[in-house]
Amino acid sequence: MRVLVCVKRVPAPGAKINITEDGQSVDATNLGHTMSPHEECALELAVQLIEAHGGESHVLTLGTAEADEQCRWAASIGISKATLVDAGSMDWDPQRTASAITDSIRSIEEADGGFDVMIFGNESADTGGFQVGVRVSRALGRPMVNAIKGVEVDLEADGKGATLEARRETDNGFEVYQLPMPCAIGVKEGITWPRYPTMRGRLASKKLAVDVAVSDAVPGGQMKVRLNRPEEKVSETVILGHGSEAAPAVVELLKELGLMS
Amino acid sequence: MSVLVVIEHDRGQLADASLEALAFAADVAAQLGVDVEALLIGVDAVALADECAAHGASTVHHVADASLTDYGPDAYGGAVASAAGVLSPSAIVASGSDRGNEVLAYAAAELDLPFVANCLAVKTADDWEMTRVQWGGSLNEEARLASSMPILSVASHAAEVAEPVTGATATVQTLEVTLPESATATMIQDRIVLSEGVTLATAPVVVGGGRGVGSAEGFEVLEALAAKLGGIVGCSRAVTNNGWRPHADQVGQTGTRIAPQLYIACGISGAIQHWVGAKAAKKILAINTDPAANMVVKADYAVIGDLFDVLPAITDLT
Image (tube, rainbow over all chains, first blue to last red; front, side, top):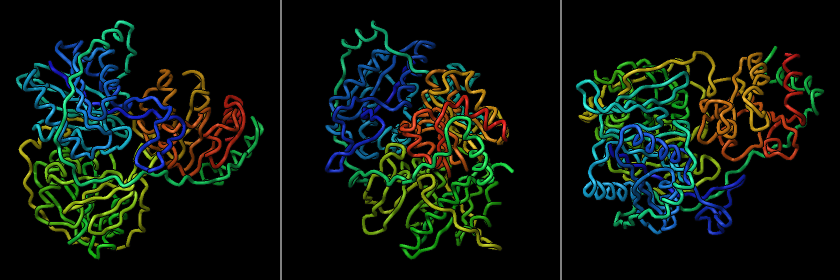
């Protein structure tokens, strides 16, 4: 089978996210870069599906040329091919991003064959637009469900053709979807445990030929004006005490909040 | 003209976030000088019509297609897009939940229009201006939108639910829509129930543990207090990464966002990924040996000390 994973390079912030003076982006000075935990799990899932069913995995990213680093990370854990759509920016709006990714997938499929499964992160770590996967899947005519935390692929489901069972977590369990393949899913962290690259994987990733593409996708209707930090609730922390001696004060607080009688 | 609110429900059970979406829509509608109308999708959903009216919907449009017995993003998104074609609303609004965002993404893709997720505030003008959530709530984005029909979801807790109007009765209009042929492929086929009772998302008290708990066994003291208070245990990402708790217990940007009456954060440093999932708690009590920990500084209350001394002492008194 053939599996595609879409990832996005983002800064890896520490305890506080700083903004550049012009308010246009996260100040990434002294920061490393990564991808969202959802996407790390998406890559791992793709590698596991190929290990179980055979075939080829492909990572696709859109951003700056530096996203080459994320392609190589993907290769270091076992993804076999990579395409980077060089947008010269990490800031394309959701419609433009989806359009460029759709075009790129069409080109890859024309050359290498169709993908049976496309995996997206539930939302990007930074802009959180919650839509690129759905737009791409719809444009390509494939069913997609988001927020998935469990997957089972059955390539010969009784007379129904290949099926992907996708589970979405609810308050008390799971909703189960049966998607006819080819299909797409947006996954959440926790669907699987991402592996660490082996030394062999790291060495192999250096030899990966990352296919660099460009896009003529036009901007959509949503435009960023600037970023700012939300006002934090400023509250003086009330210290109820030290060690076990604070227990009676905590109990008073619980009573005050109506949480015990 | 109206602001059309897509009401989220599960087989006729209203999602509370929809009431926030109705409240948010009321503000947008007031700016535009139009009414709020609700869209109920699914056979069972009509039972919610009066509740929508009590929360400000002047008219409720009910899509009762016989195939819509359960949720499916393509079917629901297609129904929204089709309804938009018939009703021509000024804007479409839904809650910024898994389902709300997914349905609006499908509808926006079908209509080839922008969709702005997780808005905190909106100013309507020729080009709409909105404040929306980025980085899971750590940053806000000021955005401008050029669209013939703005489609937006409402960030969790961005609007306060209005007091319901007692005795309100909805004007219900049945709406015929055209559903995409692909609609059935993404419908829920089954449900697996793992637990009944309180959940992280609904518990009045969450007792959370972080790296300071030290081991899977260490959570026994948290479990004991949570059981006494009718609450539930949650944890930080450090804990799930160490394999001490399942990911389903994780509170944070990529886990569950909680909003209990009280969050008791034990041995949690308060990394940004955790904080954005916990900050909607009404009150936060941090228990930590480090008085300078981010969680202690941001909390409403704190006890400075070892959680293994403090928690059993509280449990004994409750």
